[in-house]
Length: 151
Length: 126
Image (cartoon, rainbow over all chains, first blue to last red):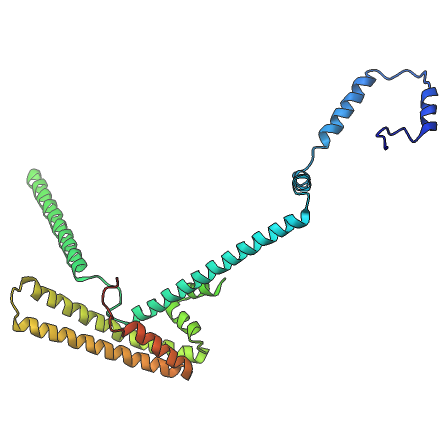
């Protein structure tokens, strides 16, 4: 059975490390600095988004071939739907342009104001003219009054 | 840009559509465009005549309670205008079809007759 102890296969090294003694004094705040370095190293190794996604795909979808098949099927369905929609849109626009061609040439289909709309437009025009005349009349009265007041 | 978008963006989309739909060469398209441009003023004149006649007829009808010789004359004139308009259009369609390759010309005539000369032409669609 495999062991996770890194030193288990290096017996001579372990022996040397056990026997090793150092009388050199540690620098001040040695232990604190070691922990700080460990913390810094841990914070720097935050995994990237892609690594997280890759990890997720690797764990959640343990059969990449199947996952790729799913993606391929979805892409095919999407592309087919887009192509069908584009064809329908093209047919619709072409039919509209055909209708437009006939409308341009046929006086009975040419869009223009109907008789009733014309009547309304005429009434609006008359009203506008009438209100314009009224304004002009009021202006004249105002000017005449001002002249009388000056006199 | 997709072909349809380029049709829509062209100066005269209906003519661009005609060129593509009936596979016209540049020379054929030029001739069709000339015929089209020559036809439009006649069409506008006809529109004005039809509008004026419609106003006249509606005015007569608005106060009428019985058939009068004026109404009969106005109806006759309205029908005459319609006939003249259809003759003018048909003449134009024949001219346009003759500038196309024979097969496309036949297809164009069949299509345009269906659009402009159906038995239920100008009737309200359900």
